[in-house]
Image (cartoon, rainbow, N blue to C red; front, top):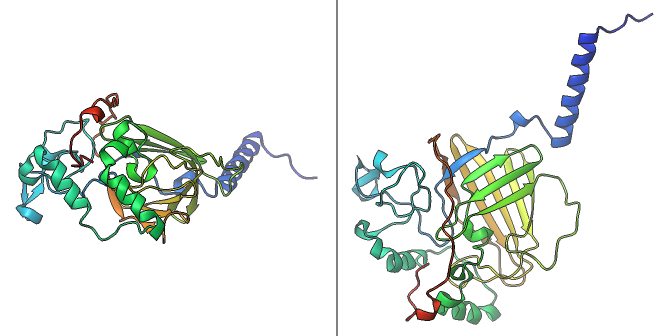
Length: 301
């Protein structure tokens, strides 16, 4: 006759069974996955030039003669040389002579000087060029419309759960955005063919990389400020992985209707914000009041 199992041991075995069940459901124990939680800085939206050293106090030896020092705040910062407080966090941009008045022309030239651009099918180039030429009025972002997941870039804050991940974005000059993304092996619903600006995302793990595939997008956003339109069939694949205290962010855009080949954006590296007092601030209200008074074609964004 088998001896009865002590109550304490029975409870321990039951707890172990529950824990094993949870691991089987989510693929592994929570601690086995890379920790993506936290505030991340750097690697801003598409259309903003890469970060450069901020003018002011710093260390010698970086390109241009100086490297951003303590006075520059955490990596990132919308306008490099401007003061940055404990809650400041936006997009790094180079400013000639540290002067914000140089942002417009220099920024436009910088982002048009790269060689990694989306390649459209021939029948769409005229429309892309026309949208770009009239971008001050036609760019959805300039009219308080959502920036879209490609232009927003990586999130500022990530909250990671076993079966869901939450992304929070600080969108420059506009309202903030958030995304709630389920983690599962397959979708359990049909994608809405009418689409939304942020689409229908689904995440899964490939080893230590979190992969997010987003479909169900509408055609009311641009993938870049140069008139880079897209269609309803666009699919965006984002990849997040850790390298020490850095978060590596890769994006691939597939649009079989508009693009001649997939558009692979440059890899962006984000750093965990070490400031424990940092909090995302409320965004200013987005109100379009300038469209009727615009003259010329110079682009701000």
